[in-house]
Image 1 (cartoon, rainbow, N blue to C red):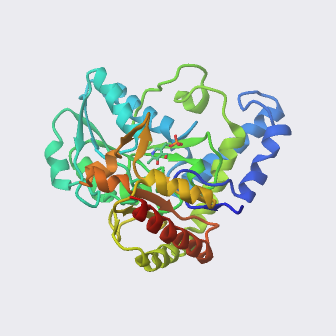
Image 2 (cartoon, protein in one colour):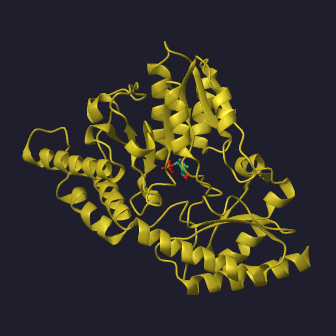
Image 3 (cartoon, rainbow, N blue to C red):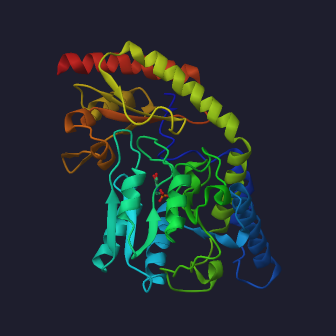
Length: 380
Ligand code: PLP
């Protein structure tokens, strides 16, 4: 059965060109980048080329890029690293209620060590309130961490304005751009961002490799002890093939970003037009300031687990808007934060389009959804 994949916010397939660049670093150029002979130097050079590519993609300097193992590690490293480095200045962090668990759980872990965290509310479309942000800042605030784009509802936060507020108040601004990189053109200088988390597998690179940009004037303490890799900020032998893949993937993504966005927007608009055949649906999140490939949709009166079971039988991959854990429905914290009732959240799925999707795929998706929802509503 042909697989129709609509879960690009979860992960993406590695692009052929990315894989081709990575392959030699598994079997031929396998030297440890810290070694002083030529085989080691080849790995070091490859890492430096990738660092340059990441820096160029976001208008940063190569010495401001650190490679990590994933987006989660980048988030942990910056939050915990800044909390430690600026402990003498203050112990207050501001974030939002709709961040990814990599941020939320890092904050909870810091709270156990005495750091105070403010979790900002969002409105019905998922936007943080800038006035609430301003009010939350106090003399102890050292860091604001607000995501660039939400992974569930695709809402794009006003990061430029947030950065301005942060800097007026002499506070560092970090953004988790794991969902945004490859979808939104990012210029750290123009946007005034001090730190950014990224993850290769969200933009057609490999899993198990991420990166962190940190402005060279900002200090952070490493959270992992060991060797001197990554300028003493992230110990551990580098995942050379993964880093090479991340570098290539970000370069490709950035070069084709406009074309990619246009393609995804066309697919999304086509989906929105066609999905009208199904009554009683609700699109969640903002329709304007939103990742172009994201749809978050609630089907009233049905359970998303049943929808997904039926779609899976037809080879369709989408994601649940709220997850079931140990037999309980756990309403997504994002859907709760935008005010969705548990009943509506229960019928919510996330559809995220990507490079290989076509209009024909969407026809198949909508036809299958129409049939499925009709059947489930009759059963209920
Ligand atoms: N932050 C956001 C917004 C994400 O969507 C994800 C992954 O879904 C992460 C962080 C974690 O990234 P990784 O899977 O590379 O650990």
